[in-house]
Image 1 (cartoon, rainbow over the protein chains, first blue to last red):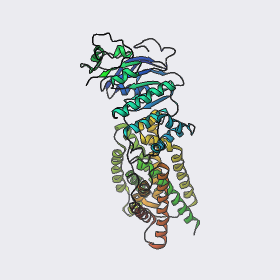
Image 2: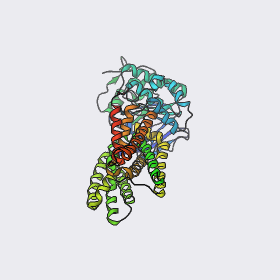
Image 3: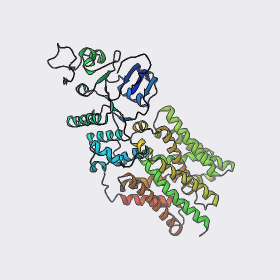
Image 4: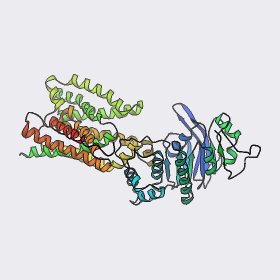
Length: 257
Length: 259
């Protein structure tokens, strides 16, 4: 992955973004963003609220208008797990109905729903539960199952655990890592949780007040970089490593409240 | 029984099925009340047709479809909710409609008359209902996905804006077929009441669609028997609506598993 490459798209890149600019309601949210993504990458997108993380995902999915170039390599299949879905409690829709609707729309084999349910761990009972009555963690698993239908090779994840408790959060990230390993998924993950970012991602794209920065977690998750992105003193640092250089791959990081 | 009468009954029953299905999706879209309101969009055309001596249904159809497209366009341009735009266009349509309709024709326009149908009108009705049913079965999955989350549906490849416009048109077409039997004021009742009843009775999609259609068919069947053999002064529209209301009341006796 390379940041701000002004030349043409790299040949083997799965995704090539060049000079991406997105404006909404007269405000420029993303300006002149360029980066490449390669198969098997796990790119974490971080930055303060309003820095355009969700908009970036939406632009990559083709859901918002943009200027510049976004090129997915041929045959790329995208799966999307949005930040929030306000499911209507009154909807007479079971989990199974939702997954089957997508499977039928995409003309997937009838077994695909069962396969994906098994993969994500949706029980038979959950499959026939109403979509509006299941817990936050279960709902998130349903959304992941929904995204995995159709065997995508890229998963775009927008704050997948924002509304979950710690146990559920852990479970979702375990599931995500497991899927990434087994299915060689490429993942784009928007997250506020920097410890998760450090643990899971091999690349970090930081959007924020300054110029967007891109690199491995150990280069980006430094107090200086974070301060320049967030505009305030970072809430994130290394325990007992403050005087060390930041390149310590694999080292577990923690949030400091 | 005359063949014309059989045409009428058959078309009324098919309309009931279509109204039950379209009403089910309208209930999930939370635009059920639009069934009542949107039928009033036919009024300016009906009024103009009465004044100029045209076929009232043709006039009604033109103004209803023009109104529907106007709603969709205004919604897109103003980014306001569907119901807000329906409210605005409805108020205008009702005002223009009543101003245009000659006084002696106003009652007919509002409450309709149960007329016997010619073979040609029957054929036209049959085509309209086939289109409605075809749309529901062909786009059922896309409707479900866009109801659950428009954004997720778009990311899955559903053309959500186009689907919404199609749904509004099909919704209006359903109301239009109903105008014949139910009149402008009650044309939406078989879209609204049976689907609310069906929702009480079923908690999964297929069961819900089936229950709504069944209640709608029962309402038309018993409404017809009521208005033909028991209380002859009542026409099919009010009779079917009353039966649907009674069925809804009966559904309240049982607490649904999901509530």
